[in-house]
Image (tube, rainbow, N blue to C red; front, side, top):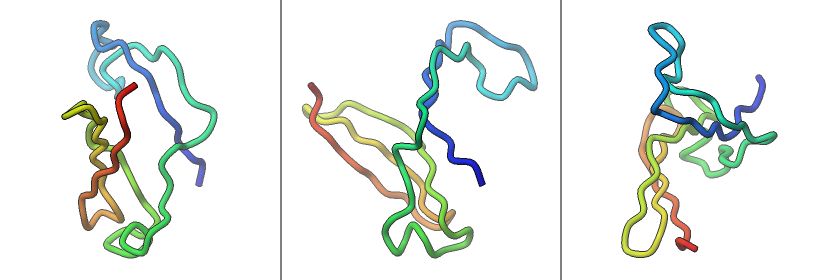
Length: 81
């Protein structure tokens, strides 16, 4: 299965129905930055799957909300620079 990396979008441009992303692709990472590592990310309804739900700046930190193995939600955080 190919790894999917980060995609940077310009949401101001509509690609039309059936185009998937709903915005212009500005850039794409070479490698995935989020990979299944922990037990709850590897085992669940669909194992070995993690997927980003949203990225929010809050209280001086980035909060990355993500789904794990189609069974749970999790959050990772890092300081805003």
